[in-house]
Length: 240
Image 1 (cartoon, helix red, strand yellow):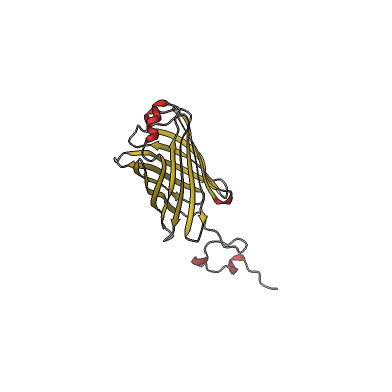
Image 2 (tube, helix red, strand yellow):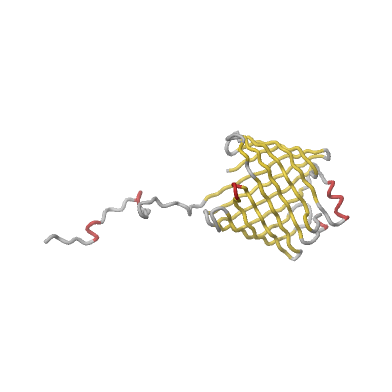
């Protein structure tokens, strides 16, 4: 009679290099590692007939493929050194599909004007044809606000890229102290041509169009603010 050996008799010493179990011979996907990513999407100077201003728009996240802590910040600095349009967001990000994440958190409007705080919830991801899209709703005791943003990369060559971009802001109530009106408050659209001299550093030139819409006559002075209308821009885009 042949000897019967227990399972332990066939066990082999565990090799640390193969400690992660394979399923049906398929290499496991390391999709729960922690990553950090930051993108300075706009870091630019704007010039028009009414003067110039500096604008930045950036975001960063920390976490895994499914859960992230997301930070967003944007604002402008005029030639007089005044910081305006400054809003900053801290969001929890949860992946809900292959291309879209659900985000929730807080937004703080902090600049030279009065500070405002909002709760935030929205979606961010890639729409059809890899169109970058964001739709975020904000709520507070001052009402409801909304922001829609979108951009698309048109590859002229592997390094020369034309990017149209648009941002729209809506408010349910006017806020005279911050110069925003009810309804469609402002639009910022741009067309940027960047050259990825290095994959992480890309200088660009372009034009933008900015306009503030107000339903209150008292806000109209703001429509002549530096940066409104058509601007020539140049700047640098970077990520790491």
